Each structure stands twice: as C-alpha cells, then as structure tokens.
Amino acid sequence: MVTRTTALTAVTFGILTFSALSPAFAQDAKAIIAKSIAAYSNLKTYQADLTMEQTGPQGKSKTTIALKKSGEKMFSKITTSAPTQMGKNITSVTDGKTITLYMGDMKQYMKMPVSPMTKQMMNDAIMPNSIMKKVAQEGTVKKLADGNMNGKPTFVLESSDSKQPNSPKTRLYIDKATSRLVKIEGTAPAANPMGGGSMTLLFRNEKINAAIPASAFVFTPPKGAKAMANPMGGGGAPGGGR
Image (cartoon, rainbow, N blue to C red):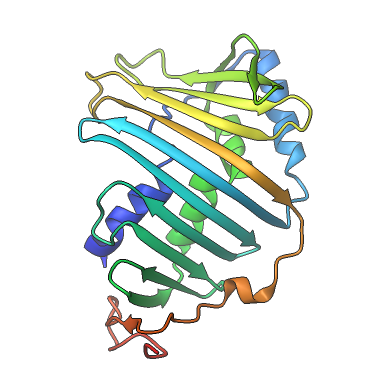
C-alpha cells in the first residue's frame, strides 16, 4: 500500500511542502489570517478546481484537481503531467468510511478503510480553511505589498523560517473582498535539504455550502474497470469490476 499511494499522496497532499513555519506574527498579518479563518468558519460543503504547477530537480509538472467535500466525504479527480506509480489520471472517492482510488490509465481500482491519517491529510494539506489555521498556529508571517488576482485586490503574506538557512518561503494570496485564500506560492533554494524548486497552487471556481448530490461520493466502476486486491489484506476489493 505504501508504494502504491506514495505518488498519489505527493501529488494530492504535497501542497505545503515548502512551508517552514514557527510562531511569530506582525499584527497586521495576524489580523488578516484571523479574518480569513472566520470566512470559512461555517464551512459545510466545499467545491473548487485547483491547479498546481511545480518546478524541481526532476523538471516541471502540472496537476489539476476537481474537488468536492462534504463533512468527511470527499471526491477528487486528479490529472497530472508528472509520472506516478498510479498513472496520470486518478480519481479518489471517500464516503467517510471507505476510500476508493481509481487509476484511469490502468482501468483498475482499489478500496480500503479511511484511516485517521488519511482524514488529517485530506483536511490539512488541501482545504483552504485548514491551511489558514495551520499558518495561524505555526507561522512566522509578514505582510508584503498588496497584490492582484484577475483584477481583484489581494493581501499578500509570506511565511518563512529566518532561523534556518536556505529555508523555503511560502506566499499566501488572500482576496480582500471575501478573505478567502486564492493562491499559494512556494519557493525553496537549491541548497535546501529537501531540494530546490517552486510551486504555485490556484483555487478557482469555489463554491461554499452549495448542495452536492450524494451520488458524488459513491464510486461506480467504469465499464471494464477491474478491482485490485485490497492492499491491506483480505482479498479483492469489494464490488468487482463491471
């Protein structure tokens, strides 16, 4: 299981790789983050299209994620240019108890129980409200000059660890009108122990608390898809391929 999901985890949940955070704030940055957290305080459902572009020692890659989340239920459709052990087209469907991973390039899928670690990763690394809470709890953040995203003014915050040489830096772009996170940029120098590179993550087409049909969190195997053996043991995945 570890080898099969490592690549997917890196693609889907590696968004905060460049964040190096420790507790300290300029007051204005702290107020902006508090307002952003408040903007997500009544979050029940969340839908968005995410685009992540990365540059590193292995070259450039682009990943798009169509995301739907309602409570502990989650759907994500991932398309990436980066080669992974699971291919370049991966769909993940979580009904709260079971997660199904469908590898479109191989027309295979596997099912397994949702672990506490999986739940934490889904929230901490991909949901904007969790990202902002993490920054509030752990971040050394300063306010930079205001920015602009598609004609809309944004606050720009930067987190880094000044105590660590060659530490990464993360910039957060927060829409002034809605206080929502719209972009993350991360950079790490070549001398960083984890390797140098850059990352840009965009949040588009957000819908908060809009109705999501229950069918979005039910996996129906596509025609010809085959169930793989349960990597945690116990034979084949429930529900054979159709």
